[in-house]
Length: 398
Image (tube, rainbow, N blue to C red; front, side, top):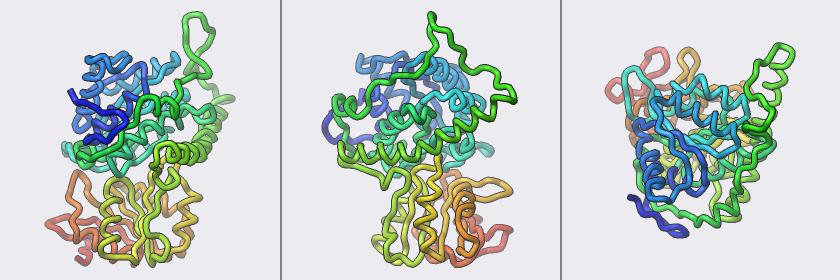
């Protein structure tokens, strides 16, 4: 059994940090189905339950589709819920993800990001969660173990806000964060309780009530449901900023403004945009080797902070966007978002890196830093024996 010291620093990996944060958030129903690299998260939650540390019903289901369905049913009765998954498990949940968001159920789910099959691959990229970007869930992408812990707690408060009521995915890179150990601060239960009050639903299913949830939405009503949902997603931006600020005041930690995080932007001549753990690699590279390069890390992919990103990137003529997922026939998902909000006179190129756990080498970071915004091409980095290949098959420079 992992021994947690509350109110102190603990050496935890990303999965353990996620589970410990969930423990402190006091969910009443947790639906679990293990899948690599998420498994240790739900195992630790089961250990917490077995050792009487967690007052929750842990439901062991036969598939990820059932796991998210259990959360939908439980959350509809007015209790806080949690589940976690990766890769094909998240893909199997696809049908129910839209139901959870459409029913305005503030479920929180941990995603240990892993590549999608085929071929079968258990290593990291962000294709699993980014494939669900239109499902109506908030999506947070973490760059450290501490951020995983903090984001779980923040996600509950954002999702459960009366003017939001949308589910959240807290995404952290499989193995690179899920299995990476880092000393993190774990607050006391009282500190978390003061930040995150108990969940009080506006409506719930119960035996004595007269309420129907998830009914048929006829043409004369359906669009209004979706407009309310879209408005809630927009309001979530303000709530994320507000919660991040309050969290910083209470715990001394923040992640940019909650939506984005800047590094070396002032005075930089060109900029790289990235998400997840590789943002830390670029931050280190900038610190040691290239003060002319700035970094913009996207923490909230949904809602996407269009205005905040545009305000920063419009200062630059040379912009490189790093993706660890690819939309076939289009490009990197992050690149597509960035391109859609910038003026056409900006030089913007896309770097596809580390799919399926491919190593991001020092020379790859140097290549991205050197070529960021130098043309308008898409580069596949470190493929075919270490080459950098331009979209369409031509070999790029090293």
